[in-house]
Image 1: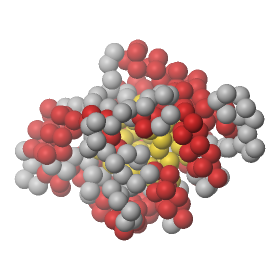
Image 2 (image 1 turned 135 degrees about the horizontal axis):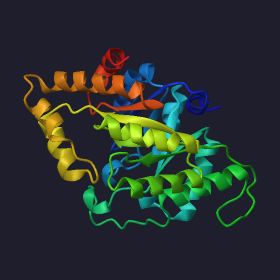
Image 3 (image 1 turned 120 degrees about the vertical axis):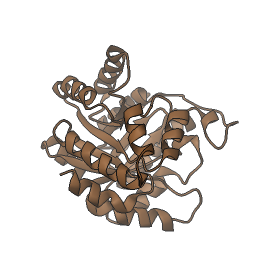
Length: 288
């Protein structure tokens, strides 16, 4: 059974982290990151060619993490596969014991390390969630009966700070109607907007895990603002990190403050340490 599902449905506050599969076949570095994050997290996201850049498949990395005794959240990106491959990978995931899935549409391939790659986008994340629901009911997206159904706990991405809010909320409602039961948000900087999102989504039966990005350096600010679509670090936070004598130390303090606020608002927190993996225990401890 999915511990993530059990805890969220029981109203318990959850902590998730994130690991990136390696760009290669050597799992050593990923395992080291997992060992640092796992003692503090209830589940770990395993990204799928994040940033439209080549990495080991999330499916293989998720299974490797599961074998290490850690509950993974298998991420599926619609960008790189057609509906046959997406469904085949979902069946493979369930057969391997992966219960949590996070559906994302994916970044434009031109933003990654293979800019000439063709984006597939045969389905979007909402449609893929509907497919996973169908598999839970015992059929594929054509209505054909499966020999053995699945039992996925289905998640999706959400952008509480996006404007106009009514458009973002409508998309979120569509995802919930499609079968998404938990959301992991884009990095949160405005807690009032997070509160607005939680108040809108909870009555619809979905949970929100709010993300904290550990902004360890001015370089991270520059990268986020220039390359991550839909995400902009506010000037006040950027100035705080840029003006700090020790930006990494200030980033840890800021992340702890954000975790403390999120505990009062959302159903969980998703920490993205960006290499400061050793600090996650301190961030969560000071953010308690």
